[in-house]
Amino acid sequence: MAEKTCWHVYLIRCGDDSLYCGIATDVARRFSEHEGQGPKSAKYVRGRLPLKIVYRREVGNRSEATREEMRIKKLSRSEKTKLISAAL
Image (cartoon, rainbow, N blue to C red):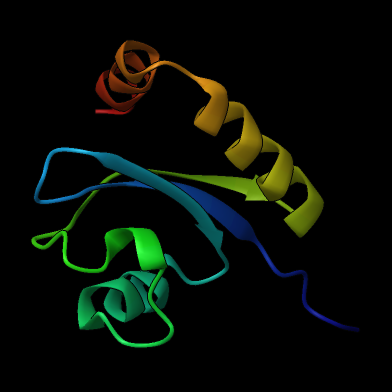
């Protein structure tokens, strides 16, 4: 029986204090790719070091993770800040 893959949604605070939202099955690996600033990092985070994960949440399958990512991206900055604070 195949093991179910869990997806996560995460927010990264960039060095310029902006926020980047993404999804991944392995947040630590994905964060390392972003920090590496190489071809696998998101274009948005390149040149915006240092990076820090400020929010992460398991959301289930890829479809659910994508929907949650889109929902978070539509939030205002103050709403994202409240989301981060509530998770601490």
